[in-house]
Length: 228
Ligand code: DC
Image 1 (cartoon, rainbow, N blue to C red):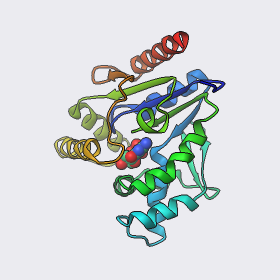
Image 2 (cartoon, rainbow, N blue to C red; image 1 turned 180 degrees about the vertical axis):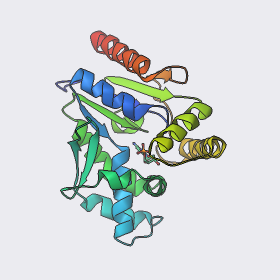
Image 3 (tube, helix red, strand yellow; image 1 turned 30 degrees about the vertical axis):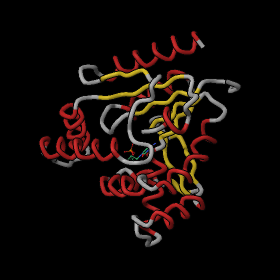
Image 4 (spheres, protein in one colour; image 1 turned 90 degrees about the horizontal axis):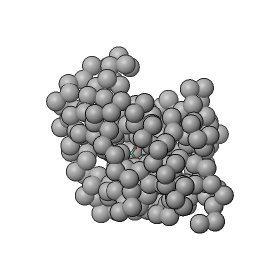
């Protein structure tokens, strides 16, 4: 591999603890962080604003090729989506935009349009990319691949806590059912289904707190890059 520094791919379903763990890992290593889900969310927002039918794969794919995506780092170390020079991060973090993103991310035209972009964000290495298909499709040659999971019940619990922190009350049983349905849809979609790369390190975070998860990720990266 001719990259000056490693690419670290972190994939897994929603609620497995990817975002926070990826952010903490990037801070520890002094690497950039790329939240690829934000690209699908930003596209979904822009497509809706443009009045497009989100199921129109060709139209949404064509829009994806024209958008100017960038990332800024927020005060808390989070990566923030900048679309056409404007910070739209708060707007893309809603449940509504998440649902729209799940529709647009199914289109092969969209995935193709965002592929080159994701590769450019990571090409120089020294980067943690977080998503669903980073280790399988975007960077199949990533130096380190990690696939995080957690039980649907645990993921539902975390989701309910996240929502509560934002003042929104939710029923854990309803959320757990939604998570199961989304998992099945993501795992069974025709293009870039959610599945671990054969050479990914699998890590079930169900019984681990965030500090333990980050320590484990650092240990995985250290041993993988030493071997390389
Ligand atoms: O991780 P997230 O919730 O921000 O992702 C938003 C949507 O984008 C979600 O439906 C999964 C999809 N996604 C994807 O298909 N591939 C990625 N690499 C990242 C996200």
